[in-house]
Image (cartoon, rainbow, N blue to C red; front, side, top):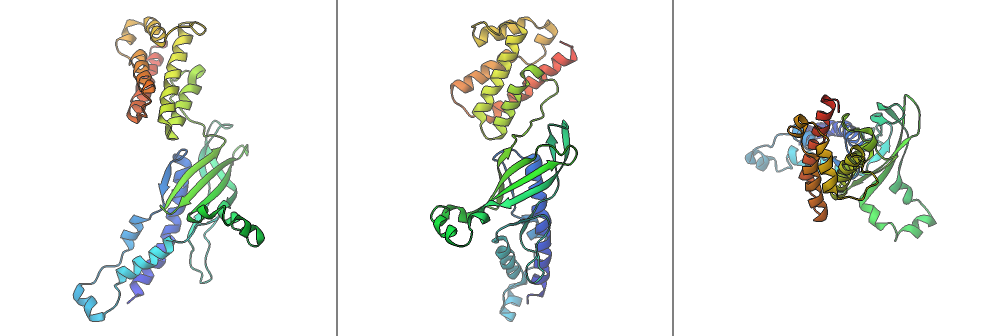
Length: 306
């Protein structure tokens, strides 16, 4: 017993390396602050799992099954720390270690004004640097004991096209087998609907960033601010002390009847957002619905060239 499990385990180690690299790319390209991806390779485990012999066969050979042996080896491998590197790292037996391989990613470049290929120019395992040898390690022992169950990585990328200001990410890996995006500098540039007016776009963009960072209530506030500031500009009420209800009513009066009767009402969504804000409700469904209907309202404006 063991030959089948050993072969499956060798394939598992290589497959996990590719999977981990793909998950890191997914995290940096598609996720936002405080969001995560899983490094638990359930599909790989299932696809490589050796068949379980019948109880009668196990009783005759009196040994651990290939399946159990494979799972034991895989579990030990997944308990290892991640080694951050630009290519796969091997142990003394030329077997792949558990690695976080840092490769090119596609990110939005503010200078190039589009998604471009970014290459890694520097990366470090911050936690490993904390546990230095010698006296300094001893002095820190009591301070950083909480870091023993996680790893922190700093990954720095640069646009290959313009070679402009680098983008730095703080990534966390812990015992839950999740990679978590804990920080980014500069802050992510959020691409928003083309119909959103440029003069108030910053409020709309901040709403999306706040929401995707887990700050739903702040996102609702920014959406309401966007609506009010747009309505104030259109009605020329920027410096007039007036209620939001009056401002949005005045804005509705500026719309042609065909739009006022067909497009989603900004006044209606302003009121819904206000109710959630006053009640301090982190209403994610409301945010998603309000965002979609606000975008639809401005699509109407764009179609009718208003």
